[in-house]
Image (cartoon, rainbow, N blue to C red; front, side):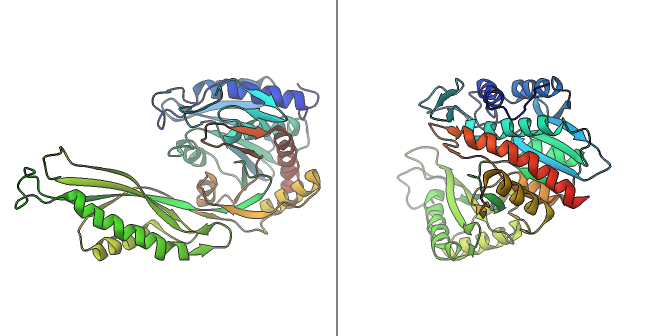
Length: 384
């Protein structure tokens, strides 16, 4: 067992080992089919070598979560969660899996999003595991597939319950109480295929879709941007992918558009569908609309026991009260909240999520580890 789990040298070694273990999500980057198996095995072994009960749970074939548990189930239970997968490395201008330390910045794919958080959780749990009288239970949810469909988080909440959860996506030391949701829709317009010379017969599905897109863009500018939430900002929508046509000399018979709508707390997939149908009607065209995927927004009570515990812990560790904030992106926190597990987010600082250069501020990783451990103790004290 490590004498001081918060040793900077120990945490840095763990973080570097995590970065050296590729865990690119195979669904979003099929050319880099690493997956989470190797990193899950590394983390599970790391925990077991420190006497912590840990196991692999398959969220789907070949998509493992790491589950671990310390403390007593007779008291309150708290989940510490981070995802193990990363986005791909195409276009990176630094070696993705060779961690470099420069001016307290640790570079590499996943350093910021979010292996720095994984290292912080591991250090926090190692510290808490040394307390033989911990008045509660800490559950680790180190999950797969957050970068795509959140198979890991969804599987975790099916298997395990808890009284609260702390997600650890990078937050620059802020306490995140809200985030947007999203809805993915597919729109299809139909035309009539004909030879390019037969203007009298051909009907272009692409031209129809162009008019639909014009209406969608106007709806985004004039309606959605005026809907505003104090923590996460305005709603938004964008046209993401389009496909249509079979050749230059043929009128397109079919055009398919995929759009993403970023939703505010209180907005529902049913509302998004109804509004999209109205926008299409306004365009003067017809389109088939299909719901592909939706994920809910999050809004957490700033006075909940878990929010107070994290806020007070961060204040005690860092010397200043963290800002209550929201973010525009989606995270697994909403999956926990949807299962009745109050969830907040607190994580390290850095730059470069999904970008060509990625780094995490190492001081913030160490600080995050201390905050997580202190937050667990404070939560157990108020929730007992």
